[in-house]
Image 1 (spheres, one colour):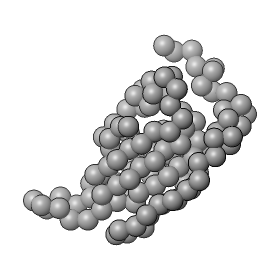
Image 2 (cartoon, one colour):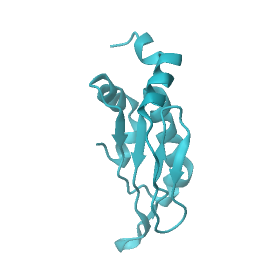
Image 3 (cartoon, one colour):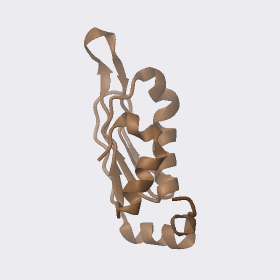
Image 4 (tube, helix red, strand yellow):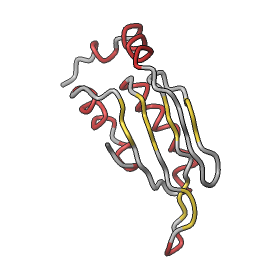
Length: 118
């Protein structure tokens, strides 16, 4: 499990995958300002580059002291496709995680094995 700000640090997710992660979770309270431009893009990038499922529940709405969170909880597959995403307001995102599909993605594009940096 990671948190929303962590999604900006790809090396963390690579480390998790190196340790065997097939799924990463990203519970979030992304602000409206950065969420609308970065949230889904960063989640998809982590899913694609690490060939993992990303499950990202996210707070939505107005909070004390004027903070506004973006929301849009999402489930993303290892190819970067958004399997489910909540709209504005409250909602539930549900998707089936196909680990055989994940194996096929990793076999067809073996970028995790081709990495040379340590």
